[in-house]
Length: 363
Ligand SMILES: NC(=O)c1ccc[n+]([C@@H]2O[C@H](COP(=O)([O-])OP(=O)(O)OC[C@H]3O[C@@H](n4cnc5c(N)ncnc54)[C@H](O)[C@@H]3O)[C@@H](O)[C@H]2O)c1
Ligand SMILES: [Zn+2]
Image (cartoon, rainbow, N blue to C red):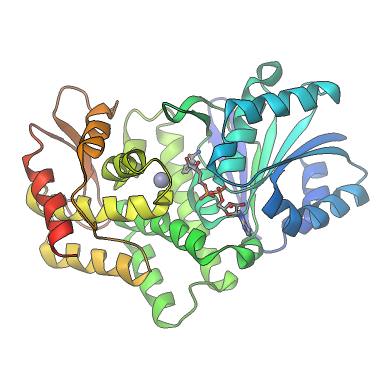
């Protein structure tokens, strides 16, 4: 067993990555001193697979629970869904002793965490993340949000869960596409901070063990711990936490330009990382061989690293809207060497335009 505690000025979060945690939800919650009343939030796909084992464990532990089941997908990360949770919790007489339990991917986590942050000025919450993306990345760090039509994550808060219980066995039912999307964030952590993660990914690929729960577990743990370490140093995204945006400047612009339909988050970030690697060669002194190797690893993981056509006005507009830009024409996280990252302020978009074209041409 390996339990990591993330200490923050305002409290602490327990972080566990272990097989079988969902089936032990009851005793895990009881050990937190929470309950007896809990409110589960899940989506219908995850609920079908994993709610029964969670519920029977809760029953055995004598917990009383309510459950809200959402439609799967990004559209559920809305104010409307949040209102549904508030309504349900109010009817159930929820108060600040009620524990919210999120069971699902990044969508369920962001929504349940946001509703927990705002209901009665803050209910305690925990999460059992069920996608690779959520286990390796989204569940750690306390950012919770819902989307508006005008943009993703526009209404949000910082509200850390009391515990993150990641059960890699749950990944068995995940679609290949969603799984690959999570691998993009795992690779990102390797590129900005832990190059050993890239070596492990390459080895698992060679051995055909990328989807083996026992093999992927140490990588999830490494990513979650590294993110926790970074967040502990910079909770509010003012310094080192920004390095986790590697690949996200271009990635977010692609998602926005395509209306969040064509790419999953991880796919958009993979193309964004290919762009960031090429930019790093031109602007940050990254050795071109290392950049090409890293890009090749992404494509061997089954992730896109090319554009089918030149992105149009919507892409460049979205890029210009990037709120973290400051006075520079472009602020982008680049990598001077694999395993290191730094924020660069670039005076013009010229290099990025060339790099984006190179991704189209070499397609
Ligand atoms: N808060 C953060 O720091 C942070 C970081 C990164 C991403 N995010 C957010 O996370 C969201 C994306 O998360 P995601 O990729 O986990 O998407 P998701 O939650 O939509 O899950 C993807 C799909 O997989 C299904 N699914 C989930 N777990 C499953 C399982 N174990 N078996 C079978 N199917 C399963 C879901 O029903 C859904 O259809 C985005 O909204 C993004 O903004 C948040
Ligand atoms: Zn991301």
